[in-house]
Length: 322
Image 1: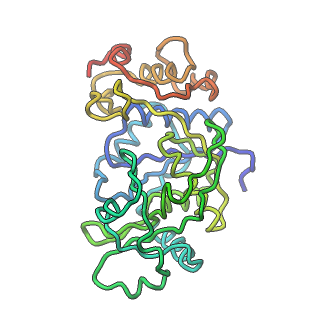
Image 2 (image 1 turned 45 degrees about the vertical axis):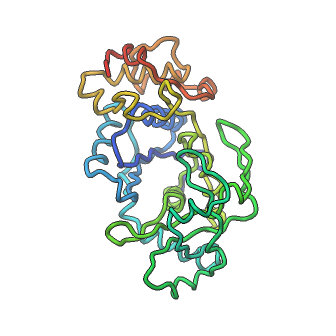
Image 3 (image 1 turned 180 degrees about the vertical axis):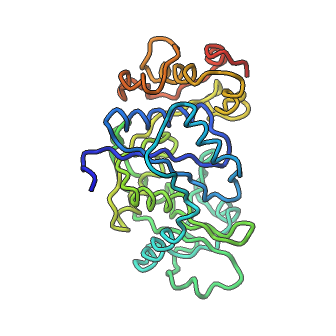
């Protein structure tokens, strides 16, 4: 039995592509938060997004973490090996009539949504299929469907360990969300991120989640799933992202920021960690440093609340021309 005060965290890369500097910064913060308190840290490969998963990306993510000096405890957990647990959770939600089958396609949701959706965010679901009960899935013939969770009138508020109080959104600002997706190109339906991450965090006893603040909108949904499944929810720390000079999330347009590329080009892990530590306010200059050495400098309070803007001068500081 784990001491209730012991931190149990996780690193959870998604092998849909290469890990970049933004991912590395979040992993570093998560690693330091756990290790600075003698906590446990697990590694989970979140590989259920089958159409986008790259066959080489999981091993590359592991290699990147090791190269940066970020270790973990125990064996790597792989989501695609845990479908039975996700099915059990889905069945429990069906019994409670908290989910219903939805035959709407993405294009239909886009056309029917009464409110515009933000760039990169899913559209607000208008509730087209919300009249259905779970058993109605048996009567749907010849058309794929997903499972949606019924939102209450308002999503729950929560306290974030970094940002503080986060108010829940009203139903009309988000709509019922998908917990089990329609079949992929092979015809297999798969659990959605929202359900899988809740099941896995609970199964591993995770009590501290450190991730990018782009995932803040997911947290109230996951808290609803924890409550509905009778599971204990972790504490959340959503940290700012690294963005390009245009203010947008890192992408190819910002140059090659992949950890694997930096490694192949001869940039040292210590220089990368020095840059990331400086961006978090732990070092006065971008000096090379190891992950272990950073344990004595780590302070969550010094991390700026705004995104870190990555510019050419930062690449130059680590000796890399992208």
